Image 1 (cartoon, protein in one colour):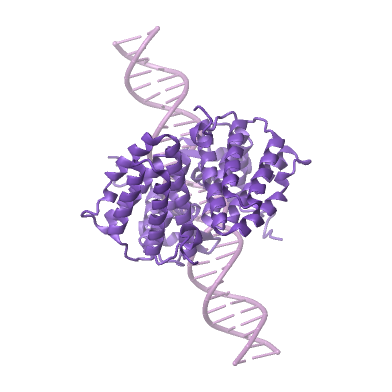
Image 2: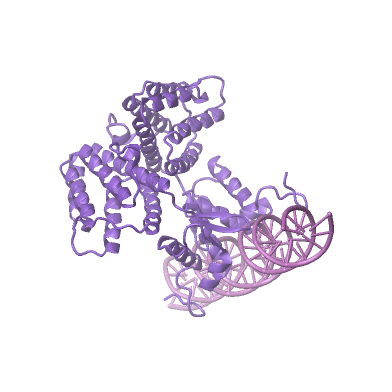
Length: 227
Length: 227
DNA sequence: CGCATACAGCTTAGATACAAGCGGCGTGCA
DNA sequence: TGCACGCCGCTTGTATCTAAGCTGTATGCG
């Protein structure tokens, strides 16, 4: 129980505003290039502009919005170039995680590999698309977290949010069996304590993700690529 | 020039608040564990609490403060463990930059290597400690920026800010000749288009930085380390 | 002497009020 | 017709005000 005097007060207004706007951003409710205003959101959520302003600031810090003084908040368009940048950054961080696990000895890798093999994201099973997406996120988050570096873990989470927006924006189908199969392959490489193979499979997986968005990997992510 | 009506209005109050608090955080004016309040800062800067609140929110997002509801803003203590985590993250990102440069061909590496060799951070010359620190920052920023990944560049900047706070907190002497020498060695490896050597020298450089803070590298950053 | 409770002072969270900036549109003039 | 200027509405930036939460202290009781 928390209702103090009146009726509702549950979650702080600022959090509600943040969730609301972020949800709109992620599910495409607020399209790219749209200019939204504090008052607009405040009215919709029946609160004052103050909490909405806080939400806008947070979202700007996360790179979703760009605040123009006296003008409004621009919903930043996501360019294919940025999508590639995000995937490159993910590769850098997840590769770091694998490398660090490797220095902790083969036993550490095997343990994580076994944990990942049991993860739902390796099961092609009966998952909805949304559930698979969530599982995918959890799978990679687990890998990164296993490196035991809280700074990298935080940065990685922010990256995933960014990618979520990209994915939501460019609704393209994803080859589900391919994804789960690649997850399995990556987990197996870890279980076999083969960091180089794991990193290679990770790279292929991320290139596949990018391709699923209709974007080529570029020369770094995908050396086979002509671009 | 920007004075509109009265006297002062130059930079927005929110920015001034942000700069002020961040400066205090970075130069140790606000010690670890100190609980500061909006009103305190607002009074000192002769403005209302609103812009100060914005500054606090930004600084919380950057990981410098932790806001406790109805209590105040806690200046987050920096643990040696976090310092190591930051350096590990830096290694991951800068190594990524080197790798990506490598895929762009030897010519790209040589160009960046030559640029870095001319950077002040390679000159043991007559630099104040503060200037050397700034140069060091510029040196590494240049390397990361050369990878042409804006997402990584942004994340890296945030990391450097965090490290600045760590360094300011733990005032330990830094071996200046060692630093410039290591910068030079790294730049030379790039000029010679040898990415593996460059990454190795980068690693040694970062371990050295960490050691300068009185912290051991741990098994990942420094495999020679027993810890 | 030990503990529970009430109070006082601090703090923030959120709402409201006010001032100023920017852009679009319409009007008037050449 | 074309252009310049000025007004109007929308937006944010900042200040101020009110309500409420948390902590520490002091007080009273057992």
